[in-house]
Figure 1 (cartoon, one colour):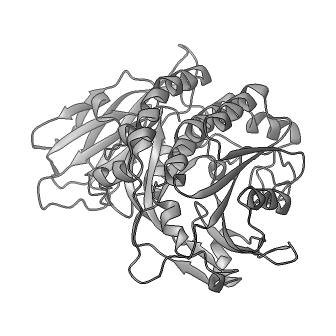
Figure 2 (cartoon, helix red, strand yellow):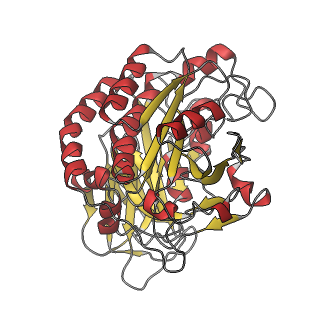
Length: 460
């Protein structure tokens, strides 16, 4: 999907999100054991919006050593600012994450800094400025300096000054530009901003995760991730001499090795987005994305969508439990059948990746390698190769093997349960498309299936 399409969709959603902001109730969560603080605490948030930091150790893409991707600075800059990467991230941050944060910030003292580099393309700077104009708690920080997860001390001081704060404790939280916090976030965190907790960390470790497909969130699942970077909060303090204490941040996975850490996972509070342009997925070469993404978030089970929509109303119309958008799905088999030895073959004429959902009869579980899926591909450009070494290597990364004598690929349907049937993603490289696939028994034993459904998947 082009960046123009992303921004057009963003504009179409803006009026709807404004209505959400005007009508949504603040879902303050009362804690059962801790007392309320004596006054409304100050929160200082920070987002690094695609900061140009080539050579930094913060991210895999920016590292230059053996543990990095191996980008030259020119390659890094091209990747960092490409429309394919920045378009979806800007859409998430400007049109979903910030409006959702605005709901959470009502009745709270919040300043959120957004750091970006002078080299950020002007069109994206304009979108950030427009977002700051719409949401007065947002502050823009254009800087050529290296930027860590926590905001620099001088920005923190300026935020505290806005609220007339000269001493005491306050909260410092981080939010990546492609993640979302619930509208109860500050109400929940307020409980922990006390002098007794100065220097402590607070992690709200429960929430949801989903895979982003063309602006929709599919395969929405429960998430349990203690010490997740998303929304991780530090209880910092300002001393009587004006110095800021407890502002340094270690890697989020080891904060409890540096300071006492409160883990509160009673209520979902975070929405973690999985998408193709995620920094953590960068390998320097083209990689299949969807199969790995679905596996990563499979564990906690399908989300309660009513709860998701209540806590994250800005994206209420974009969340789906299914491994794709239901309205776009195609039911391939709608009645029970035994897979014949020759298999059940279906043609496919939609470009891009797709997910396949197989349901078994009630009470039946799939054992390993019981169902094999063979699939054929063709080059988007007629006459061009569809089984080059690069193509074969790409599919092999998703555990699909090429069968030369049949001129097709083969992969086993995962036997891991999802609460929504058994799933398989077929994702071709950008120059190929899937043309057909066949479900067949993986062994000599009969395999009964109840239904098969295909879901087209987009590119982001």
